[in-house]
Length: 371
Image 1: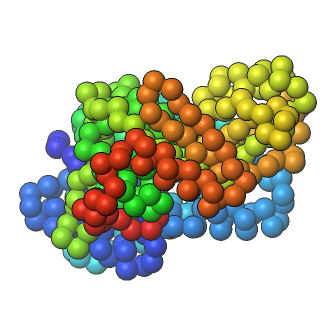
Image 2: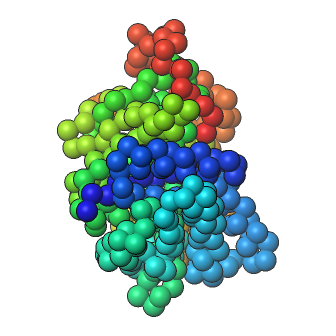
């Protein structure tokens, strides 16, 4: 069975009409001969934070399993919205959520790891329907409890589904065409990268690049699934970046806003905690801020704080900084600022140093839209 796997992130769903636009795109693809499509969806833009804050209004320290279940409702609502929009066009469609998708995980609530994926539920649904809509970022553990794969992990769901169905390509849609040499919303001269290697984009993601989830890239590399980064425009789908083993390793600059800086009593303690986080596949950077040792955590922050709490490390006070990472081989440069505008200025200066020829190239900015 030839199945096309598409994933649409929260930036694709900012208002109800966006679901109609995606549904029409699916209809166009079916008319072009693609009979079976699986669509993985994220929650609407901003929905996950709203759900989290609502639960925290009830209890500042909720059960991790309760938080996962609450956050999952964002993707479930998104799946229902798209299912309604697709059904309205007369297409046979069904939606599946974490309870029925066949994705089994461990019980690390907040950022569960995939143990295995059973293709049978999706294959059964595809036999009866032309479009299957799957909620991203969720699975169930051995006790039947809903688990959350982490923030922005719908990419991981899409890649895992593509792999278990034997498909070698997965399409990831966002509001920008693909991976750039910098955030095109911050650096006007940022250049689109046509091809990039798994390892490079995974590393960029761990330092705050938003286009792809680092866990999805790692999974794609392991299971040999190529990722096509695209955006949906009025003229259809525009391909931007292809992620493969043979891709390039271009230089870039990453800006990560609201990175968490956790002061630690000593450098020895900091190094120990950094190793603990690395054992949980969480990237942490050992730095000194205001002349005191600290850990910098850019991604998986909530999960990291939970791990550190289990080690008896207080999670407050945490300083917030903007981190700028200079990916210009062979050395990675890391800079941090309390002032966001100063950080953005630094990122622009770095990009001009790396790509002086890009100055004034207006053609690179034609499709840039705010995230």
